[in-house]
Image 1: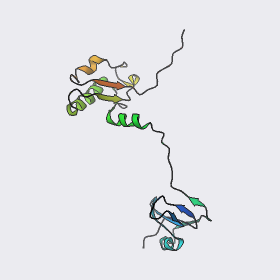
Image 2 (image 1 turned 90 degrees about the vertical axis):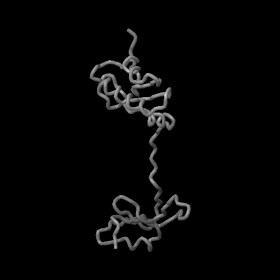
Image 3 (image 1 turned 120 degrees about the horizontal axis):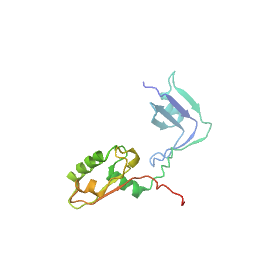
Image 4 (image 1 turned 90 degrees about the horizontal axis):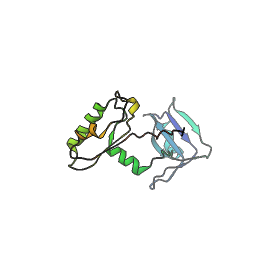
Length: 153
């Protein structure tokens, strides 16, 4: 019999599973929930090295993570070329050339995340840098960095 690493018992477990919305106990093995059920059902998962925790009737809910993603922008960024780690305009051109090979003619090629301060050339890429690698596709590359605010002198 495989034993759980940890068992939570005597609780009010909200499973979010419509076929079994409530349980009393949880068995955890290798950082994964392996079973939920009554205290009696989960008892079989307890071995000599299993850590057990009496919840004393407290409620357990699934973990909720708010990643605060602006979903439309995130989706667009996933469709574009990730330029965060490029270190030269030539490397940027290579990524563009590779994407253009699989893009349909005249479709936009998007890219994001570059930082001119990290580029070997220490300058912004120009349209002349990019046009020769994308003669039939419009290109829009954004740095993804916040604009630098400058004070009026």
